[in-house]
Image 1 (spheres, helix red, strand yellow):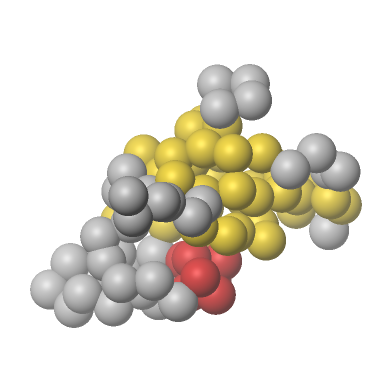
Image 2: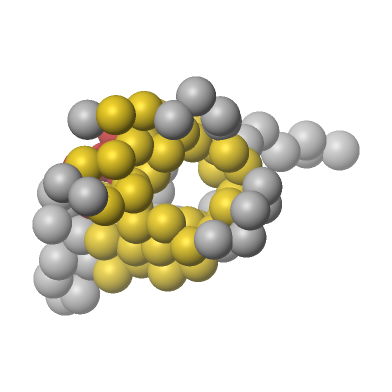
Length: 87
């Protein structure tokens, strides 16, 4: 797995559960994240989303992340929710 050194910010645009009748994030869940840096959509795997330990829904959540190359695909990893001020 090759990591790109630039940390991106973006928004989770879609997220599909492995089984829509079971509202739990599993490794086979998947989604798409739009990078604010370059406007591209990148793949979000369920295994990465599980590590955030956040409740559903994830769509619309602002995150920061690194990009990784795995088997010729660019995927999102090292995900961290962006903190939002409670003011």
